[in-house]
Image 1 (cartoon, rainbow, N blue to C red):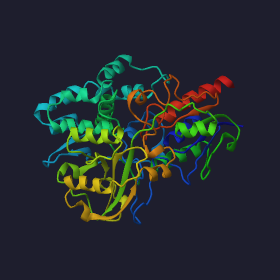
Image 2 (image 1 turned 30 degrees about the vertical axis):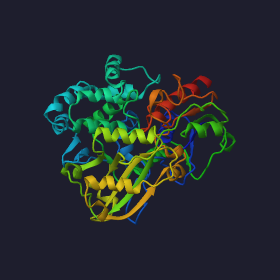
Image 3 (image 1 turned 30 degrees about the horizontal axis):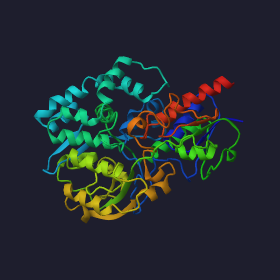
Length: 470
């Protein structure tokens, strides 16, 4: 009998398996797709030689992750590549706010009226970032806080809505950039703890940047899988699990799946019926005949570029997709251009470009024209450089990854109490009512992103159970 079986070979499932194997437990992973990766894959979606990331592409939480930093992933081929600028947010007047490694450079891009406010916001936390992040990403109840006072101070800033925090800023460059940071978790700007979301992304960039993985996000998953294999773990691909009886006998079963899929497979009935899925992404991968022609020079040097004319426009786009049930007229876009630092992603002189906007869950329309009109506002002539595009709306995203219910790439709405307490209102989110069944996906704290911490935290709950029952 195996000690643990993991269902789903995304970053969280692989991290959970690695953490268990490192502690001497026998582990097998079962993945429905033909290769490991989940939300961290790389594929030729458009033309030969153009290597795209179907979902996650830039990794501020990955390089900062306490779980990943404790593993020898570089030994297995993972190399982080840092763009000159982690992120830029162009404005319609040709300027750009930037999220640079330097706090001073970032603050200067906001203008003199907001530079001091930004420095006062982030500088108290930056020297203690590693402790703060470990405490923040280990909640709830997987570890005692190393610095409870620091975590409490961060909570005072981060628990209120981001709209409260943005009152510190007087001008649009700072407000637009910070609104865009919050939108990375597809959360309305006025929601609980959204100020903390923006703070985490800003501090992550200042601490270690927003890198891409050399060769694409698949290299993160491949490194985890290779390390797991060296530890004696076994990975089975092309193996769809429809019920627990499809799996070999084990002392624990760990699911890197949506709560809905877990309930169906494990026979948990209505256990997760109150779990909410959020707005979807509409994603386009482009093969370009050269770099993006951004008007703002800062955007040409950035790995990630946020596209939204103002904080008001960003808020309107999020409300349209999340609350009003319609596609926004001017979608807020998150874009990534890996070629600014990784020429291996496309043939010489060409580029891959990655962009998505937000639409209602399950939406079946086509946002291509709206996305491209938005891009043309900040990069005139962009359409002339398009060699090919691959579009994926909610149905395609859900078909590509079963965890993306209705196209929700966050594996559950990151709003309200569910941003902090997911997938249920409990201090033990990784457990289920079945004593041998656990969940480790992005539906559990600390939530979405390629960082492995949900898998790391779930593994703690699993090995505690295994030791108790041995």
